[in-house]
Image (cartoon, rainbow, N blue to C red; front, side, top):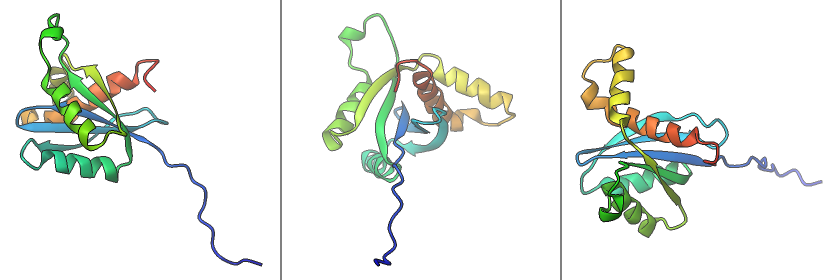
Length: 146
């Protein structure tokens, strides 16, 4: 009889990362494909170490899909948004990760309103993660998202 302990066959849950990309700070939110509920993860400084730090989080949290917020304007064909540029940078480093884009219109205003409603102070310092959560939850709420 073989008495070696066997590892349980537990399926790995894939996480989805939401990103609110800003010039100074980048808000991150996470959700999993089962619960479909987004939560604030963290805010990273948008500095020279940003992409390395982001990749570490993606690997640590077993992220399988990334949703990046971009503004939706009529003249989108004429401009490549910063969020799309970020998506291209991530795709070069992690080509196996699926990247999609979500309309981020009013996400910052909604985030600030949510935070004020919860009684938080200095919402401008902390709204990036909440904005990422709103972007990700908007994507998750679409019937065809996953």
